[in-house]
Amino acid sequence: AQKITQTQPGMFVQEKEAVTLDCTYDTSDQSYGLFWYKQPSSGEMIFLIYQGSYDEQNATEGRYSLNFQKARKSANLVISASQLGDSAMYFCAMRDDTGRRALTFGSGTRLQVQP
Amino acid sequence: EAGVVQSPRYKIIEKKQPVAFWCNPISGHNTLYWYLQNLGQGPELLIRYENEEAVDDSQLPKDRFSAERLKGVDSTLKIQPAELGDSAVYLCASSRGQGQPRGTDTQYFGPGTRLTVL
Image 1 (cartoon, rainbow over the protein chains, first blue to last red):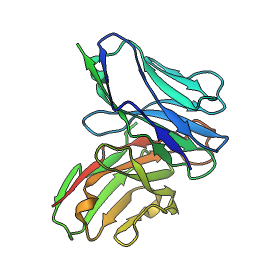
Image 2: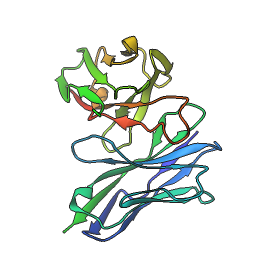
Image 3: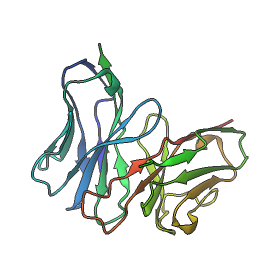
Image 4: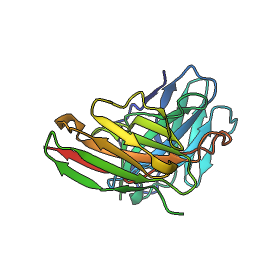
């Protein structure tokens, strides 16, 4: 069974600073994908970034980067140059590539960006 | 490209009443998912469709929940009768489907339907 753990229920960051949101995972699968989604107060889950288990380089998408440490089973999200619009819930999720293909989500981290 | 469309956005009903949610996936996406999100938690899968076929409904409470995806496009999720504990957000997502190279089968979500059962 897969499990995602996000240990930070809430985080504060000053505008323009960088912030790291933690995510650890547990799986016995060899092939899997790791995702980060943003959920603003409007409720929609917005896809941010993806990392494959076989990818050797960390994924980057604009201001988002994923710090993937396979041996430690961690997939932390780094947001650079925080903006007020980054205030939202952030969910880490995992998908096994061969089985159910459903996403297993963590409990989320609420990020608040302060001016 | 239009995103995943869901309706209604909000629904308030009395317990024991029926309720239905509708989802229109992104054009060309063969796989459709229904997730349940309780307050303060991450979403959990209820059912996954590959085209018209429900390939994973192991987490769907079949005594009161049902779903269909006619013609492999739109989908409807129904609850009958609703219970107080069904109050939650129901999210629909879609992806291109199996057969895609690893990393390209990203799931894209709709805005969700927030259900309140009184």
